[in-house]
Length: 349
Image 1 (cartoon, one colour):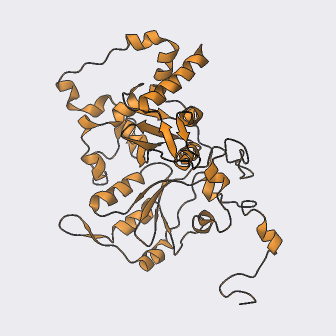
Image 2 (image 1 turned 180 degrees about the vertical axis):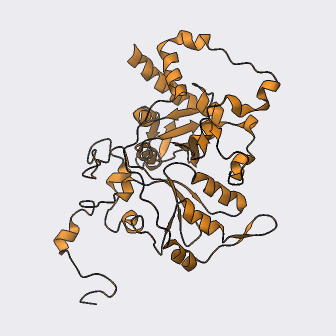
Image 3 (image 1 turned 60 degrees about the horizontal axis):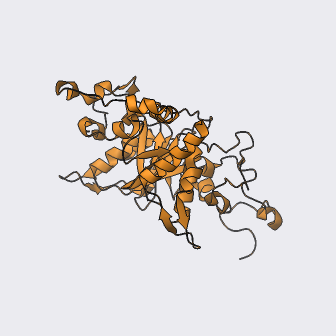
């Protein structure tokens, strides 16, 4: 009971020192450089192909738990993380998300597992590690997973495959063409009146990708709940603090959007088109049904809206809550769009 605990290093801090914030002196700041986007428990080949597909994109990292659950992370520094001191520049400010305010740094999970090359409770996966794992998976005739490699075996194998340090350089952001055109339409309504829908022949649409700017190769979308509590909306604010993040809003559901880039993209075309390493997800995608081109290539897509951190205060104004933080009312997609546009028109006047 008393004396040095077996398996632990000697005590190096007093009780009072240990009570000081564990954030002070933390050099990894993994909680401010790791945004969880999605969880998945793969059941078949399609699920595993999707996970490998995600690893083709910049700043995406996977994580695996012994339970078989996979997590998808966006590994970039929060825009409010000061690069030299590694401290939050909006700490104790009104714009700091409640999620951050109430996150206890004592026993921080991120600091414990994200700084270890190999952890017995969580394995980080980049492309080389994932390929080693995939080579040991078995499937039945229906392409359902029949066996996965033993956890201890993976831990040992990954010791020989260190994960490169994430790129902590500040990420630059710029408005995309569709957003710039949306703003221009509000500045000058005549542009909206002059914009005419394009017309194509049957032959023109034989290859839908030929005239596209590869929007499906520069954006990732992950489903998110339509907020029913203040906490769920607060997480959106937290997520938008990461450069390259947007929230997608529709009456059918919300999504978290990452503006990134596939490593195989060559200009606006796939550099591994027709090659064995091309993901099945891409190979069998029906471009004629592509919603990404509609959602990201048009300035004012009916029933769909994309917002960034700058518009979050306007988004929050579209919600009301009861005392417990449960949503009592929220505007629909077109109501949110109208609220944002009213604000922009006043700003442009």
